[in-house]
Length: 302
Image 1: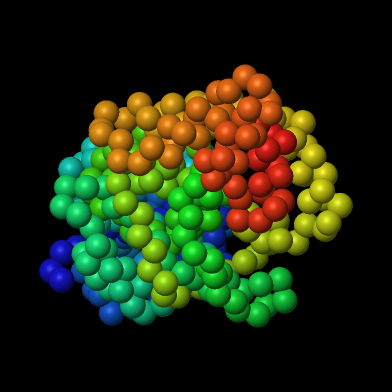
Image 2: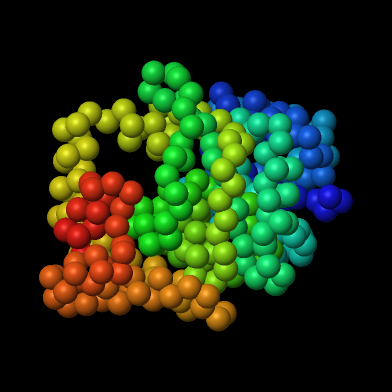
C-alpha cells in the first residue's frame, strides 16, 4: 500500500487529550499519512501542543481556516473543502476527534477492508467498531447489532472518528447543510444514497468519554432530564419535520444517480399530510430506531 492517507482533525480546547491522540496516529503501523488539523479558537494551550508536533513531524499540518462559523460540523466542513480547494488529491480520507486513542492498525486494517470492498468510481464508506470507557471507567465494545440501513435514517450510530471515505464520496459531500446533526450524519446520508456503506467488525480505537464531550454528557444525564428532553423533542416536532425535509432534499439535490431509494422513501413519509398515514407508511417501509424509545419518538415527532 503505497498511497498516502489523509486524516482530518477538528480541535477546540482539547489540551488534556490532543497530544495522546496525535501520538496514537504517529504510532500507526501504516506510516504514509498526512494529518490536517483546524482549531476552532482554543484558549487552553491546544494550539501550542499542535504547533510543537508540527515542528517535529512534517506529516502534521495546522491550518487557520476561518469563515465566522464555529462548531464541529463547520470545522470538518472547512477541512473537507480545504482538500478540494487546494487540490490535495487523496484517494482515501479519515476523520479524527481530538480526544480518542487510535489503536496501532486502525489505518492499515480499515484501508485493507476498503480496498477489498469499494467499487471503482463509486462512493464508499467504511466504519469500524470501537471501544468506549463507560460511566464507571470500564471499557466496553460499542457495536453489537447488525447493520440496518433504514434504521440509520432514524438513528445514525456511525461515529465519524471510525470512518474512512473515498475521494468520490468526499467530492459529493463537500457542502454540508446546517440541518445536518454533524458531519458524520451528512457523510452517512450521502454514502447511503449514492454509494455503499461497509462495516468492519474490528475494534480500531478507544473513544474516551469525559465531561466536555457530547456522548458522556448524555450518558450522565439523570432519568428525569432524559424524559424531559424526550418530551421537549416531541413539542418541537414541527422544527424536526422541517429540518428532516430540508436535509433529505439537500441529499437528493446532489447531481449523481441515486443508488438507494431509502432517502426518497423516507422523504415521502415525512411529507405526508396525515399523521396516521405518516406513521403507517414509515412502519411499513421499515423505518425504526435501534430501540423502542427512538421508534416511539420518531412516530410522535412526524
